[in-house]
Image 1 (tube, one colour):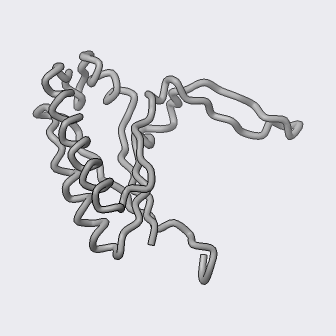
Image 2 (cartoon, one colour):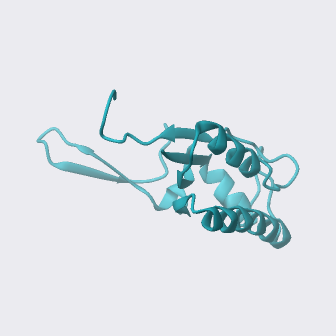
Image 3 (cartoon, one colour):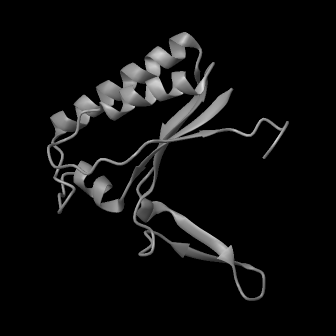
Length: 137
């Protein structure tokens, strides 16, 4: 079964990773970034070796996003991010093909062990099964 595994963050988290800290998002050093990338790369390499990795990537900061919604005339209205009403956003994802929810949960346990600077806000990692086209929605 395929699962979407999502990590969350905020614009402040992205700024902290660029060395500009704030409350709840202390500035990251180059060593902090290297440790996090090494940890995530090891997970990705293991998932590629087991054949469980379908896709995965980190996303650019929310400030680089666009919000598109229908306008009063039905035509798209585009707003640049970040959005004041949005606190956490999707920061990265994996699409995994695993034998069970328990296996995906085990992988997420490793993701949660990623090193971060002390005082960094930790967010839950979200697991969602992908709809396979058959059965219930």
